[in-house]
Image 1 (cartoon, rainbow, N blue to C red):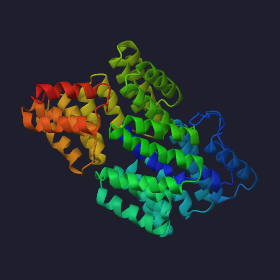
Image 2 (image 1 turned 135 degrees about the horizontal axis):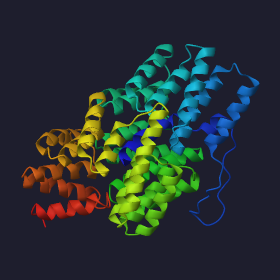
Image 3 (image 1 turned 60 degrees about the vertical axis):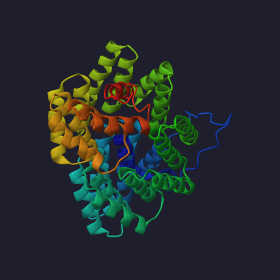
Length: 431
């Protein structure tokens, strides 16, 4: 779930610096003690939307403003987790094209919207159409890179990222380049790029986004202290980025502060009830001995999937997660397999392999689990799933290797799976 959040954030990162681009004033300094969180600071994206709406009330034929408004709605959907913004984005972007059919800004916005709705094939088509209208559009290459990444075409995605860097080597391009490096397991180089991106960040939202990515890298490496520092620094810059509070909740869960973690998850689930977040919250509730509350979160996750579908989106991978969490392994396999037919991303390979294993089909699962690890992504979850499948197949040496790798990458990667990995490693004969 955390890896997919990163990908979605990259998709939404098209709007970096929105406040500055729209002429909004920079955020006021935070008063109080260092690290104090200013939750009442106005959301710069919401301010930008209001400015654009006023502009269009005065000049309804401004196709560029319509395109910017539509793309801002995509960003609002990302930041709030509310798919109700998708139809608004669609309407604004369609209006922009009605005024000027061949404008690449609207096509880029529609591509970002398609990525947000997980229609990655359509996003690729729209990005290429935008590039036909304007071959020098760095934003179009960004949307194209996002789509190709999610479609499981990493070499093409890297080429698109490089082209974006060539055209405009700013924060959005650096962010995508760093994420591309992470996907290939080049974590230290990715950290260097994120550090460069932090130095280039000016708007508070950009600083917060980069801090989140640095925090994620620290978390995935098992450095809980560094992760918490980055997340808190990000919240001091922009308190409206939920992924930062989610990161802190994970740190709390990993350090045994379960009550604080549960409280944070409850707040996040109420504010941004994304299906995968609700599944993760349910897993923590189960681990903490609250099965009834966990079942309620899974029920809400199903409702969130229905709401996403009602607003033109879809997420077979999240549906597979929900099905696994409620114990419907065959439904999980069906959802994950349907997603695999659409795109061969490592996340899809990992979850399809895990669903097959949970359904008692470990021999078939092994192919997908190996595919998930083949790109080199340093993921404790990937390694754990592969190790468990190998153990089920009787390959104790391979299981010891991959389970140990999972715990070496991050011994606290999941409140449920990390203890299971430790127990399985003992069973495999390593402890």
